[in-house]
Length: 416
Image 1 (cartoon, rainbow, N blue to C red):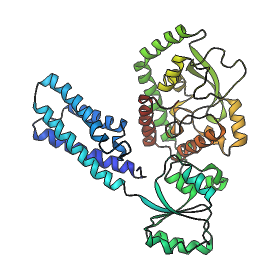
Image 2: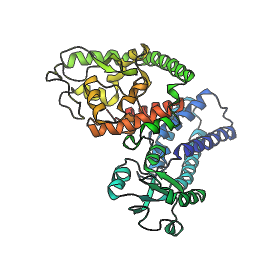
Image 3: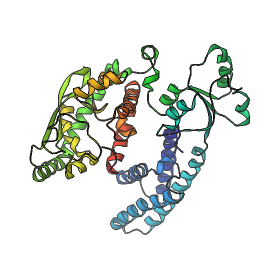
Image 4: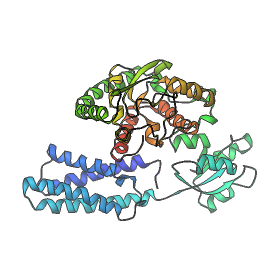
């Protein structure tokens, strides 16, 4: 099961894995040169991409052992072809065995469920907890309200470690909940649960006062952070532009051969401060896709061409937006820009939707890596919750996490 401490477990694993790798090479007299470090990072990145570092057994108890054996065998054969040293196979066998043993030890800790009680109606429970894509707590009991029963009597009997409350805690119960917290039991309102545990903002249960008193949102006032992000965007756009140039040229040719119409699709989108800019994409639909006016795009939209469908899954259609990044209209990471006609509708129906325009829109974002493809009002609400979380907690480290999650999604053909 995933936990809020997954990042810490991954950090511990990579440190221990590095020492295992380093001392293993030292014992066999292999100096840690650049190519050896490259192998280490290839192993770690492969483990990340294949969910080896999720520390769960959802795919089967022996699946991680099989998964890790693939990369170890491949790398040992590759290195053997250069060095012809038979000791390499033994080294990778030892590394494979102990890296999996280390993982099994961490899994034992991660598997320890956090038992929790939910205080609220069944409807609230279904919306806040059962409706969640990720569930970090093991809810063993639901209580309708704080006056229904003595919630405190069952804490020790059932080994409860957390209490999630839908309603605001009144003065009557405040002292009892304080005692709970001092005993090490986590007490969370549902909006806190969604922000701290699920990494999103419950926009329907916050107010202007919440924005005023809430910490975070440093990206809006931190000039240094903005400059670093801008420099990183320009540098990465140039590098990726050079690296993906052959892919873009080939895609342009295929688009022209597959269907009539222009190679690029230009469309007005709303960006920073609500200002419109011209977004550029590879055309993935028929040229007459909007002859009946603007429409929401759907997952199996018949207007999408065959190659267009492939481009969307691999995110190739987004590559021309590197030009938008160089022009300063977009960032690599941020909320995805929408069209004015859809924004006008969404701002009427969803609270704080205009907050998305406080930062530059992105090529990819927290909502894109945390929520599946969707084009309904409900989907827009869910994505808004993740976008606001990103704006509140934006840091370079979060941008790096989104970047690697995007690579993972692209390589495995998920997402839009």
